[in-house]
Amino acid sequence: MTTDEFNSTSKEYLLLGAKETYRNASSHYLFAEQASSLGHFGIANSLLILSVEECIKSIILTAGYFNIEVPFEIKPFFSDHKTKHGQAAELQPLLNELWKIKDLLIAIFKNRESPAKLLIELGLTWVLVSIGLKNMQLEDFKAWWGKANYQKNCGLYVGFENGKWILPSEISKEDYERTLIITKPFIECLTIVNELRSDDYKLLSS
Image (cartoon, rainbow, N blue to C red):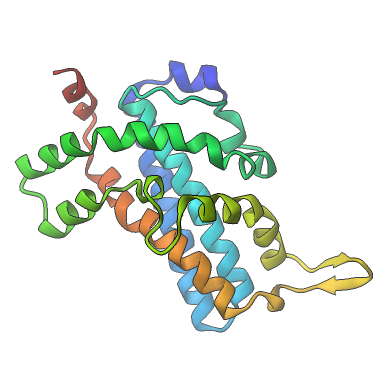
Protein backbone atom coordinates (compact mmCIF):
# COMPACT_ATOMS: atom_id res chain seq x y z
CA MET A 1 0.00 0.00 0.00
CA THR A 2 1.37 3.40 -1.02
CA THR A 3 0.59 6.70 0.68
CA ASP A 4 -1.65 7.69 -2.24
CA GLU A 5 -3.56 4.41 -1.96
CA PHE A 6 -3.84 4.89 1.79
CA ASN A 7 -5.22 8.42 1.43
CA SER A 8 -7.74 7.42 -1.25
CA THR A 9 -9.08 4.34 0.54
CA SER A 10 -12.52 4.64 2.14
CA LYS A 11 -12.83 4.76 5.92
CA GLU A 12 -14.79 1.52 5.93
CA TYR A 13 -12.07 -0.29 3.97
CA LEU A 14 -9.30 1.09 6.20
CA LEU A 15 -11.20 -0.23 9.20
CA LEU A 16 -11.58 -3.62 7.53
CA GLY A 17 -7.83 -3.68 6.94
CA ALA A 18 -7.15 -2.70 10.55
CA LYS A 19 -9.32 -5.55 11.78
CA GLU A 20 -7.83 -8.12 9.41
CA THR A 21 -4.23 -7.19 10.25
CA TYR A 22 -5.06 -7.40 13.94
CA ARG A 23 -6.63 -10.82 13.49
CA ASN A 24 -3.53 -11.95 11.63
CA ALA A 25 -1.39 -10.58 14.45
CA SER A 26 -3.48 -12.56 16.92
CA SER A 27 -2.94 -15.74 14.89
CA HIS A 28 0.84 -15.22 14.90
CA TYR A 29 0.67 -14.65 18.66
CA LEU A 30 -1.33 -17.85 19.21
CA PHE A 31 1.03 -19.93 17.09
CA ALA A 32 4.00 -18.41 18.96
CA GLU A 33 2.54 -19.64 22.23
CA GLN A 34 2.12 -23.12 20.76
CA ALA A 35 5.66 -23.18 19.36
CA SER A 36 7.12 -22.04 22.68
CA SER A 37 5.23 -24.79 24.52
CA LEU A 38 7.07 -27.26 22.29
CA GLY A 39 10.42 -25.64 23.06
CA HIS A 40 10.85 -24.05 19.62
CA PHE A 41 11.77 -20.59 20.92
CA GLY A 42 13.41 -19.39 17.69
CA ILE A 43 10.25 -19.88 15.64
CA ALA A 44 8.11 -18.60 18.54
CA ASN A 45 10.19 -15.43 18.81
CA SER A 46 9.91 -14.80 15.07
CA LEU A 47 6.14 -15.26 15.18
CA LEU A 48 5.90 -12.68 17.97
CA ILE A 49 7.88 -10.20 15.89
CA LEU A 50 5.55 -10.85 12.95
CA SER A 51 2.67 -10.21 15.33
CA VAL A 52 4.07 -6.80 16.34
CA GLU A 53 4.60 -5.91 12.68
CA GLU A 54 0.94 -6.64 11.96
CA CYS A 55 -0.17 -4.72 15.06
CA ILE A 56 1.72 -1.64 13.89
CA LYS A 57 0.02 -1.91 10.49
CA SER A 58 -3.31 -2.11 12.31
CA ILE A 59 -2.45 1.03 14.28
CA ILE A 60 -1.56 2.89 11.07
CA LEU A 61 -4.80 1.82 9.38
CA THR A 62 -6.83 2.78 12.45
CA ALA A 63 -5.18 6.21 12.43
CA GLY A 64 -6.25 6.65 8.80
CA TYR A 65 -9.76 5.55 9.70
CA PHE A 66 -9.94 8.30 12.34
CA ASN A 67 -8.53 10.95 9.97
CA ILE A 68 -5.32 11.20 11.98
CA GLU A 69 -2.41 12.28 9.81
CA VAL A 70 0.27 9.62 9.37
CA PRO A 71 3.55 11.60 9.30
CA PHE A 72 5.64 9.13 7.30
CA GLU A 73 5.64 7.07 4.12
CA ILE A 74 3.17 4.19 4.36
CA LYS A 75 4.69 1.72 1.92
CA PRO A 76 7.68 0.50 3.98
CA PHE A 77 5.33 -0.75 6.70
CA PHE A 78 3.47 -2.88 4.16
CA SER A 79 6.32 -4.16 2.03
CA ASP A 80 9.93 -3.41 3.01
CA HIS A 81 10.45 -5.15 6.34
CA LYS A 82 14.08 -4.11 6.74
CA THR A 83 13.29 -0.44 6.13
CA LYS A 84 10.32 -0.31 8.49
CA HIS A 85 12.39 -1.65 11.34
CA GLY A 86 14.55 1.45 11.02
CA GLN A 87 11.58 3.76 11.42
CA ALA A 88 10.65 3.24 15.07
CA ALA A 89 11.23 6.91 15.90
CA GLU A 90 8.70 7.95 13.25
CA LEU A 91 5.94 6.06 15.04
CA GLN A 92 6.02 8.34 18.08
CA PRO A 93 4.10 11.36 16.63
CA LEU A 94 1.40 9.01 15.35
CA LEU A 95 1.09 7.28 18.72
CA ASN A 96 0.81 10.65 20.43
CA GLU A 97 -2.10 11.60 18.17
CA LEU A 98 -3.86 8.29 18.78
CA TRP A 99 -3.43 8.81 22.52
CA LYS A 100 -5.46 12.02 22.24
CA ILE A 101 -8.59 10.15 21.11
CA LYS A 102 -8.44 7.66 23.99
CA ASP A 103 -11.18 9.41 25.98
CA LEU A 104 -13.47 9.50 22.96
CA LEU A 105 -13.02 5.77 22.41
CA ILE A 106 -13.77 5.06 26.07
CA ALA A 107 -16.99 7.04 25.75
CA ILE A 108 -17.99 5.11 22.61
CA PHE A 109 -17.61 1.75 24.33
CA LYS A 110 -19.26 2.91 27.57
CA ASN A 111 -22.34 3.87 25.58
CA ARG A 112 -22.37 0.37 24.10
CA GLU A 113 -22.09 -1.23 27.54
CA SER A 114 -18.89 -2.95 26.51
CA PRO A 115 -17.30 -5.42 28.96
CA ALA A 116 -15.51 -3.81 31.90
CA LYS A 117 -12.29 -5.64 31.04
CA LEU A 118 -12.25 -3.98 27.62
CA LEU A 119 -12.75 -0.53 29.16
CA ILE A 120 -9.91 -1.11 31.63
CA GLU A 121 -7.56 -2.15 28.81
CA LEU A 122 -8.57 0.88 26.80
CA GLY A 123 -8.01 3.13 29.80
CA LEU A 124 -4.45 1.85 29.98
CA THR A 125 -4.39 2.64 26.22
CA TRP A 126 -3.94 0.49 23.17
CA VAL A 127 -0.87 2.56 22.33
CA LEU A 128 1.16 1.69 25.42
CA VAL A 129 4.36 2.20 23.46
CA SER A 130 3.84 5.96 23.68
CA ILE A 131 4.47 5.87 27.44
CA GLY A 132 6.63 2.77 27.63
CA LEU A 133 5.67 -0.85 27.08
CA LYS A 134 5.05 -1.89 30.68
CA ASN A 135 8.53 -2.97 31.73
CA MET A 136 10.28 -1.32 28.77
CA GLN A 137 10.90 2.36 28.08
CA LEU A 138 10.37 3.81 24.61
CA GLU A 139 14.10 4.01 23.92
CA ASP A 140 14.41 0.32 24.77
CA PHE A 141 11.56 -0.44 22.38
CA LYS A 142 13.27 1.52 19.60
CA ALA A 143 16.49 -0.40 20.18
CA TRP A 144 14.63 -3.70 20.15
CA TRP A 145 12.64 -2.75 17.04
CA GLY A 146 15.81 -1.84 15.18
CA LYS A 147 17.15 -5.37 15.67
CA ALA A 148 13.82 -7.20 15.36
CA ASN A 149 14.03 -7.99 11.64
CA TYR A 150 17.41 -9.67 12.10
CA GLN A 151 16.08 -11.59 15.11
CA LYS A 152 13.03 -12.64 13.12
CA ASN A 153 15.18 -14.05 10.32
CA CYS A 154 17.46 -15.83 12.80
CA GLY A 155 14.46 -17.61 14.28
CA LEU A 156 13.13 -18.75 10.91
CA TYR A 157 16.21 -19.67 8.87
CA VAL A 158 19.54 -21.40 9.25
CA GLY A 159 22.15 -18.79 8.41
CA PHE A 160 25.92 -18.60 7.99
CA GLU A 161 28.01 -15.71 9.33
CA ASN A 162 31.70 -15.30 10.11
CA GLY A 163 32.46 -18.93 9.36
CA LYS A 164 29.75 -20.45 11.55
CA TRP A 165 26.15 -21.61 11.26
CA ILE A 166 23.47 -19.42 12.84
CA LEU A 167 20.66 -21.65 14.07
CA PRO A 168 17.05 -20.90 15.15
CA SER A 169 17.69 -23.13 18.16
CA GLU A 170 20.17 -20.52 19.45
CA ILE A 171 17.24 -18.21 20.25
CA SER A 172 16.67 -18.80 23.96
CA LYS A 173 13.60 -18.93 26.14
CA GLU A 174 14.77 -15.63 27.66
CA ASP A 175 14.87 -14.04 24.17
CA TYR A 176 11.32 -15.23 23.57
CA GLU A 177 10.08 -13.95 26.92
CA ARG A 178 11.68 -10.55 26.30
CA THR A 179 9.81 -10.27 23.00
CA LEU A 180 6.62 -11.46 24.69
CA ILE A 181 6.80 -8.51 27.11
CA ILE A 182 6.75 -6.18 24.10
CA THR A 183 4.11 -8.03 22.09
CA LYS A 184 1.48 -8.74 24.72
CA PRO A 185 0.36 -5.11 25.29
CA PHE A 186 -0.20 -4.66 21.54
CA ILE A 187 -2.36 -7.78 21.35
CA GLU A 188 -4.35 -7.00 24.49
CA CYS A 189 -5.01 -3.34 23.80
CA LEU A 190 -5.76 -3.66 20.09
CA THR A 191 -8.78 -5.83 20.90
CA ILE A 192 -10.74 -2.58 20.68
CA VAL A 193 -10.24 -2.48 16.90
CA ASN A 194 -12.71 -5.35 16.59
CA GLU A 195 -15.27 -3.26 18.51
CA LEU A 196 -15.15 -0.29 16.12
CA ARG A 197 -18.04 0.24 13.72
CA SER A 198 -17.93 1.62 10.22
CA ASP A 199 -19.18 5.10 11.16
CA ASP A 200 -17.40 5.63 14.49
CA TYR A 201 -14.87 7.95 12.84
CA LYS A 202 -17.65 10.52 12.42
CA LEU A 203 -17.76 11.01 16.18
CA LEU A 204 -14.40 12.81 16.04
CA SER A 205 -15.99 15.68 14.13
CA SER A 206 -19.19 15.80 16.18
